[in-house]
Length: 224
Image 1 (tube, rainbow, N blue to C red):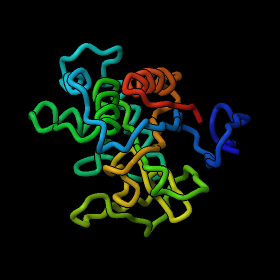
Image 2 (cartoon, one colour; image 1 turned 135 degrees about the vertical axis):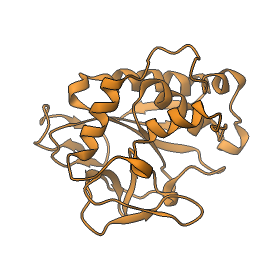
Image 3 (tube, rainbow, N blue to C red; image 1 turned 90 degrees about the horizontal axis):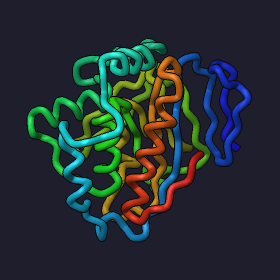
């Protein structure tokens, strides 16, 4: 059973999965799972999805300064500093697109990047066959880190709200863990949209569009 801690505006929410949300006064997370019809290696992103990776592509959402400010406030709540190389992933995407540096990766990541780029909401995508239950979302303690890329670089997670599995932190609004990232073998994922409660349900609306894109790829999605 997924339960929401007592710190938010909706302390009685419960969900059908093994994911616990620790108390957090600002977090509004939209969470869903996806099952792809075949491994990602067999599902290159179609042209329509790649076209949406452009900043001027038609989209139902548009990132703005209010969203950017709210997301940074969310990440600062526990003491984390979301700036420089530790800025929210959504801001990284916007810069990468403006510099022509965002390439297609796979259908799951491309759909995530499209939605994050246009909405301004950072999104984590975790391979459910590489992560292990139980899952939780909590603010990380001093000394917690993880490797976030194939080069072995690590991020200091102290004060940052993160998704954790049985082995520790594995995803957040800045950089996801290399340990649980999608691979060519991926068939099942968990997605988390990291938003601020002051954005009034924005994460849920954006998640609906995210799921629609994935279902156009013949994937099946389920809310958590």
